[in-house]
Length: 258
Image 1: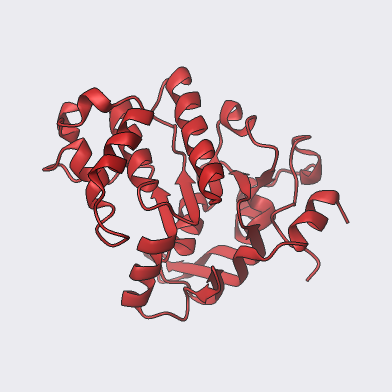
Image 2: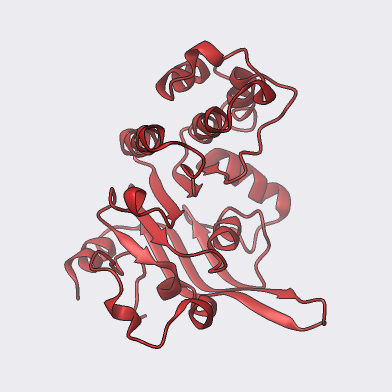
């Protein structure tokens, strides 16, 4: 057993996924399986990057883990609570309390300022803390843009507001969907460093998906999404040996062999 897997099994997983499936019905009425994850684990405080191209199910997988999408079958244990079995209201409360999400498309509220967007993210957590909201904006380099609305910010600045909002409630788990995709190289590295630093400070786990080689190079643990999601293998696997792709790939987050 690889050393990374041995270390993982010694700690209780914060996120424990089993038998997770999700299908969509095509316009022809055919059910198309897009997510088929036999098992996936992430320990408390762990930081893992999933590498995958477009169409491999990255965003769908994260949306399932966040309880944004309903799974067809399986189990998603987050901090001991099964998201799949929960009612929607209970799922929303758990998400607000335990999970931060950096969306690929930001999802900022256009009628509110950057400060208000971060603060409003705290409403369903421990309550609004304006001082913390300002601190997070300062840490992503936007203290002088606190009063700006999203339409007055650049795309990269909007992304940094989204990062600050995701960290606002001191979540146990942060899910990041291509969080630096709209930033220049310098800002991308700064933003990633912020996410990882605050997660480490708070003991939060981080699961990030990306295809950016510079971002992936910052992680000690990188897993091919096709090794997690069996439904993606037909699309992304070439005729050669997939196990030989990338010398930094690890299965340390997967819990294989169950």
